[in-house]
Structure formats: C-alpha cells, structure tokens
Length: 53
Image (cartoon, rainbow, N blue to C red; front, side, top):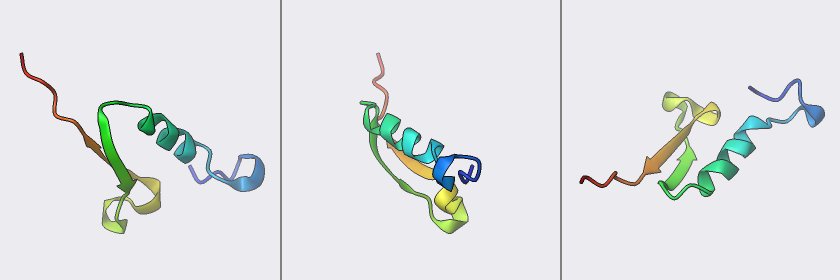
C-alpha cells in the first residue's frame, strides 16, 4: 500500500514493481497513472504485441 508499515514509512512494492518491469522484454514503457486511472497507486504499462503463428 502506502508503506505505512515499512521501515522509513515509504512504499516498498511500488519500487519493486518498477524494477521488475524494466527487466521484462515484453514491456515497452510504463508511467504513473492519471488521477482518474488510479493516480500514484497505479501504473499504465505498454506491452509489445504478441506474435501470431
């Protein structure tokens, strides 16, 4: 959540998710969502299109 139970009272999950996303080939880009889309608690992720066989 907001990191209120973490040391330093800072979010832990948000940083871990972002570090994980940059390691994935399928992820082209990601940004923090607009307030109407979830704001600071959400990310918008752009994925590559899957290849069709």
